[in-house]
Image (cartoon, helix red, strand yellow):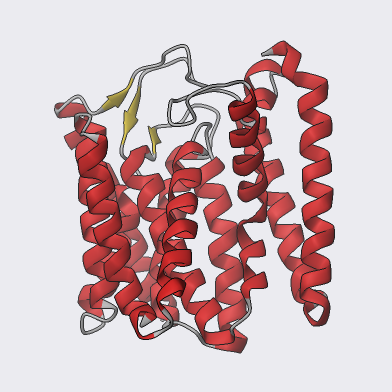
Length: 314
């Protein structure tokens, strides 16, 4: 069995290298600007490997989770198109909502009370955008997602909310991406196709888990990203900025750009904190909501203290 996964790891690695040649040929690159946290031209869209990983799983497992896969295909396609050439916001929103509707159908959400779908739409839209905005420094999207997927794999051993084969293929794609991105000088960036696709995949897995258990406290698996994203949005609203425009005001961006901590170090801090939180959550599962509230308070306090200390450097 290990040899089989090693074989597919090599397949994914080769697929990523093939994409690099394609991206280089068609000039699919990320050019630094005043809002960037990097200083060199880098290939964009390396996160397409997340879609390829799920595609391989889909083809090998009798087209399981077909509605979800259809939604992922839609959202990955428009995101990749946006990486190549900016697409209209209206078109992107239309396809995002269509993709989420397909995922909700896969969940069986439309058989529930009507407002469940409305709440899910708001939450999923927020997570997709947060994940996209948080993709700003080397290693943060791939490393953080790896921690979340490993956590879901561990929980799945007890709860069994999803076919474990899907988790394995997502893990393989994350390993390949991190090999090229989680380094001082990244070979590629995830691009919208990567950040949006992996967010969509994680939302699907997390949604299956919550629907299976009825326990919303599992949202703690995204709490570090969540606190940074929500408080940064509030901060930008207080500054009367357009929250849909690119910026460098996330805490991780301040730490990397103004405090001058290495990108890999900042990413490592984020993923290690999230990993430690998940370990504590599993250990204190009988007190999940109390633990959630304590962690939330600690993260919010830390965010505010660090922003107060370092934001004047921005």
